[in-house]
Length: 172
Image (cartoon, rainbow, N blue to C red):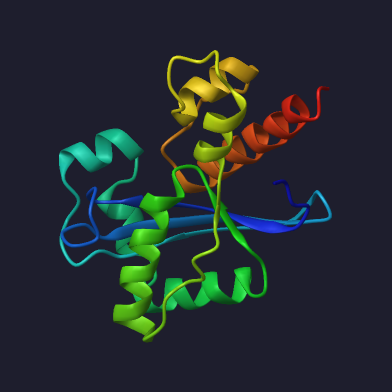
């Protein structure tokens, strides 16, 4: 159920579906033998300006993404960073849908479909929380949620949630 080596990934996007939304930030943390060994965070330049809603939610501005990588280049950076390791995300279905759609479109390949999901782990382990949103779990475990909705910060929160779920599962 728990692994010691993986890459946590989080995406910030312009929408809820890869059919009409674009990736604007990719954050990831590489964990080997339960130790953080590397981090990455890249902006991705979208094909159209960001909406007020996206900027308000994420804090990401048009100026920030204007200097971002192309989607193809950002995905290549991520592929190299995560090579050979299982992916993890909170609500992995969302992030994997964007990754698969854009990797197929830009690189002609999808991502592995064996990702770990802290949302599903929390549903299996925690029965006393009102919901399993990342913010709720951060509050439950006393994790600082300041700066959430930015890719790398969400990865850091997800890692803390994962480690706390492991402790709870092991009765610590």
